[in-house]
Image (cartoon, rainbow, N blue to C red; front, side):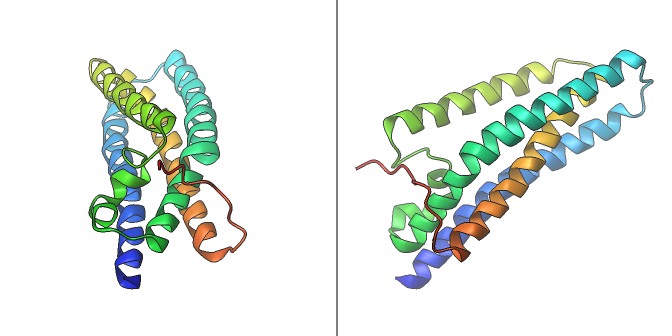
Length: 169
């Protein structure tokens, strides 16, 4: 049972980090393509504002203060309480799509729908605007990857890690 828990927690952590990493990889490609276009002062201004906004709202407030510690707590929970559904669907469990409080599930599903709407809207922009806006998202997601790695390491290395996984009963 111990190996199942270790495998589940690793699968959960790597699944979440892989999803975020894949998004960064795709968005960096969009940004690089935007560099083929001429940038004017207003492009640089919007890019700087987007980077600052996304670093704070997505990276710091969204990931560092909320999502990342909870993902770490839920990976730790899988290690200590492995069941077949938790291990098989560990990345989804770590992102609070099931076995979470009602509030947490509402937030998880609402954010997912919101993100899908934003992706659909951003795809309508032409270059260089799409690349300009996507760079802010890359910064926020990269912050999120680093914060998630930090909290996962902290959860498994520090006996004082005390973040609720917000499990439903």
